[in-house]
Image (cartoon, rainbow, N blue to C red):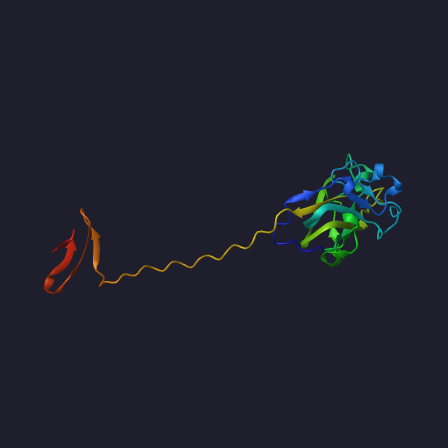
Length: 232
């Protein structure tokens, strides 16, 4: 089953880099001009090459270069571009896939390659489009938590089995990224302020029309104090 979506905000941008930032294990008929289009909403799709007509695609992958290390919380996938639901192209999509990320510190060759790939979510299977996905619809696949990486590889594992041309391993893809760090937890509420206390034996102080008056009551009802510098 797919991973449980995370509790934090899953993403705030869909990163959809140009084709020059993408690589493929192979391309159907060695024809990148027609079958090398994996950007979301592109004119066709990426279709795997020598693996295209087989029942598995274990050696197929689509690689995306994010240009710099980014927080990635998932991917969004799309099937092949189709003009209508009645065309064979509407049935060309990858239903299940796994994702690998370039490990920290493993970028090599001046930032153009990766020397060590790690399985996202321990190799969990993620879901793409299905028979009920709207025409040219996109499907988000969220990781259990974000990974910080520059390169991602998507490995198809299951394709559509509906329609006349269901043998195509076709995919378009983008990356769900978090542009800013997750918000820190809210600080705890301050404790309630203590209620003020008053001492009944404190001297009374009040403001009159000519200054501040203070005094105390002595024995037998005699008041002592000063007002304006005069004893009274």
